[in-house]
Image (cartoon, rainbow, N blue to C red; front, side, top):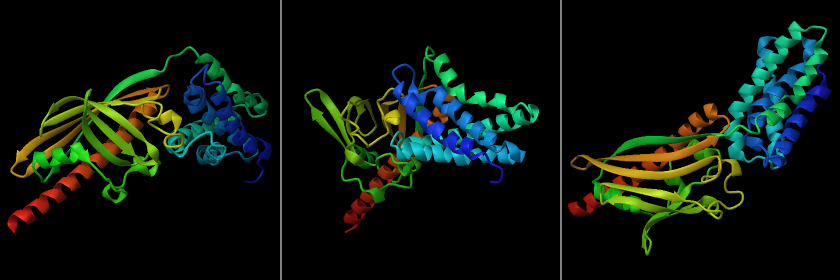
Length: 324
């Protein structure tokens, strides 16, 4: 920490927080906090400023790589304290921000070595996010439709599993396995019930924090397969339940439909398969797509485990009753 230019170091943290505020205010013109200017250029710039503050220390490659993580973490903390970003967004974006800040630190560090004696010219890095913001204002987001397909073997007949899916009441937190998705703050499911209405069969779902939504059953083959298409509205996610940028049914992410397939294996065993289709719409799909697949697979595994455990428990109870 010797020979640091603290004005630049602290300024880098404040600058990053101010950019988050600025991009939030200009979200009508560009994609604000979901733009390349914020998601990529801002942590690159914060990392570069961090190493510029240490220019008198002749920083090593490791120093250039990891020292920017401190200012980046402080910037994200500042965004959280000022309530400009929620826990879910920060958890999802932290790896991207840390990597980009390291890139910025390395660029600045080696530029300082190459331009020794003319380092003042490198201060211009602070305008990079603003220049990119102006340049990307007419670039459309990259929309991609994705599919996740996962299966699990359940020691129960299809009928038992089917009934558990159609009527999933009073889901307790301790019934759900460890999940990265829920660890970062995504509400846990509480209930999912299919009800016949005048408009056909509808799935009514409730999650923690007041989250509630519906799904229209599109196809159904009893004890074999069921598909429903999700319907989200402005009341589905109450304020504070999900970060705006990752709310399902929003501009950047949407869950389209889910299919449950029940495939008999042999007597008393069934393969339960879930197929989910969703949409990702972002300026950083190279990062957003694998992250959404990871979290989506994690969430589906939670649902598969829930139905497996409930079905097998019911099956054991039925066998005990039959044996009496």
